[in-house]
Image (tube, rainbow, N blue to C red):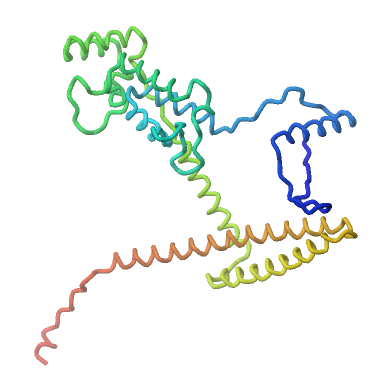
Length: 323
């Protein structure tokens, strides 16, 4: 259960435009609490600010990147691997993080003191002292050849202690054997790699899927026989929106009068809702037309690629040669 505050954007007394102040949030809350107490409804005594869910995902990505990297460059690579871009331009005051598929950048100080640039540098420096500059390569080995002492030791995951013992103490250098021994004592090895989920990429794919489903339902419900039928339908939607917009403008004009009846506000709201629905439908129709055109173009290119470039001439028969 919640409530809404409806405020006129322009005062009908002096014609001044409404400007919201930060202090008005407390005034709205006090008015809401007063009404709730009068009607016996519950009141939130100590409200907590609701934090966006993407902040938690960003913290998790930064924690994982700090575990996988020991240098600033590898930290950027680890975040990019998870679907995020890290910005730390020295000419800018704040370091930021944002999703690769778009969205607004978030300053690190909004994620908490443990995620500011100084704290991240401390965590990377600690990894550097413990594991050296190639921690990222150890955890994410590439297909390219690397020297034996720098190869990833994730191949020990899932193997028995005796098998690891023979592979380590009969095939590696003394220093690296000591390193693996302490890793085993600390519980780092053997270790199974957990699958990572590129959540921003999944969200982008899901948004595209929702658009495709909406376009499919739109074409199916209206039973359009051809692409031109969708184009004609968009023209009719445009005419309806123009008509409703003109009606709403007339209603707004009447509302500016001093003796305007209060029913005009409901009429304007109803017209606005209709226009919004038509705009959404027009947007879906536009995207459906673009998708159909792209599909047709793709099919045409595919057919052209399958056709032979120079068709072989038919061989003439002996009877045709005699003639």
